[in-house]
Amino acid sequence: MGRAVARVLWPRKVRDDVVRGAGGILLREDRPGRYEVALIHRPARDDWSLPKGKLDPGESYEICALREVLEETGYECRLVSFVGFTEYRDRRGRPKVVGYWVMEVIDGEFAVSHEVDELQWLEVHVASRILTYERDRELLAALDMVDLAASG
Image (cartoon, rainbow, N blue to C red; front, side, top):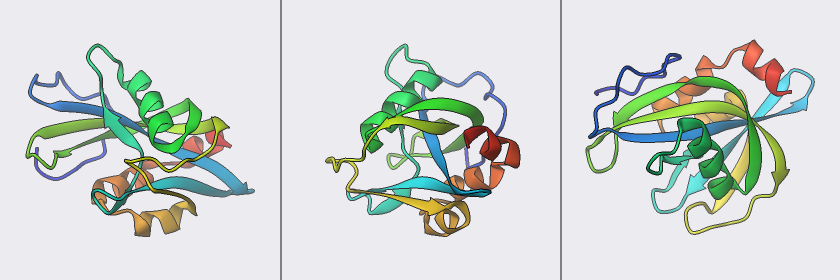
């Protein structure tokens, strides 16, 4: 699978040995035309990333994205628009495909958990510099004004 890539199309049929996941790009309008994105810090990996996780058996990408975002951030969200997929190898060397949606927070509040010890809302251009993984930066770069306007 090589280099991580953001895709805007659904991936071709995914092999059975590929780990599937989904996550969210939580956006909020800080002030007119200025958006912030939620980044999470995972102490076990000491990284800053977008919230995501693995699909449960029989679970859709969309349901997984909403569930994982709730588990990792404490925020109940709604899907706004599909952004794309990343493809990479996980820590165990397995191929992984993760789909991401722009999301709007409906309710909830962040609480520290065993997986996530910090959440920060940062302007998109600042968040891009803080993110640990290039694949996450590529997803933020894939956002366009339509996505941002739809989330505001």
